[in-house]
Picture 1 (spheres, rainbow, N blue to C red):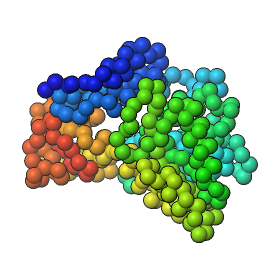
Picture 2 (cartoon, rainbow, N blue to C red):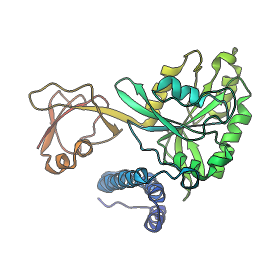
Picture 3 (cartoon, rainbow, N blue to C red):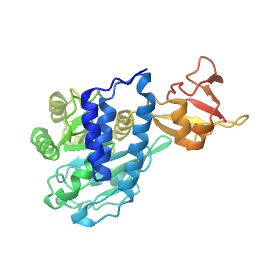
Amino acid sequence: MPANLPPQYHEAEKVYRTAKTPEEKVEALETMLAIMPKHKGTDHLRAELRRRIAKHQEEAERRPSAGKKGGYNIRREGAGQIVLVGLPNAGKSQLVSALTEARPDVADYPYTTKAPMPGMMKFENIQIQLVDMPPIIDREAKSWLSHLLRNADVLLVMVDLGEDPYPQMEAVLGELDRMKVKLIGSEVKDELLIGVAQKKALIVGNKSDLDMTGDNFKLLNARYGGKTPLVAISVKEGTGLEEMKRAIYNILDIMRVYTKAPGMKADLNEPVILKKGSTVEEAAEAIHKDFRRNLKYAQVWGSGKFDGQRVSRGHVLEDGDVVEFHI
């Protein structure tokens, strides 16, 4: 089946070929992937683009951090990288400190955070990376902030519900616009513009304990909840955090698949993390490239017509499936 790629794809491909940094290459490849029509004729090309994206992301993460002049590279770990965005004193550092082992500076005065700080947040049986960031309006961080935002899996925009949410969101959106970053929800990406990074986002209204009537969150939801999901939390009181974790997992658009050896029980403690819609072949490659190359067939418990069904490489897996590979 022919790929039938649109002209915009070939324009993004030209940008990829002339890109000089791993970050620029990842951005162009993600644009190509988003533009590409989804059908059987593009399956192999889609898989190839994903491999290139992973390769260039690893290249970017291996590059040494160079402080304020060259910026920072945060190695992506766990099931996804969530970068926090917000104005001073919105509670970003407090959230990371509450949910991870990281210990960012937390204080009542603004601009406490001067450099990105990653930490791992547990959600059920997986770990998700949260990255605390300086305020988006911090001028000293401007030279490297955009790179981390553009390469995140999801942006978590934190708003202080103790204050009027409108000016906060407009300030954040204005800064993102200047960085050529556009927020989207879990919907299909808008018409793509070369150079503009469209990032999945979750808006988190913090300090709900100060929004006693809930009016500020209602206003926030009425204005921005059409496309972008929102949750209300209070890090101080510990409320809404589980709902926020679930929202993060959902917007990552991932699934958990478990493996088992013939004659053995499945290991339900160490899932393989895949994008939703991934196939048996892609699951095999995520474990090891030799699995994919030597795979004869697989058996699936979960999404098959019956438990232990023998399936082909192209079988689309579902969250919670157990797969037994035969090579």
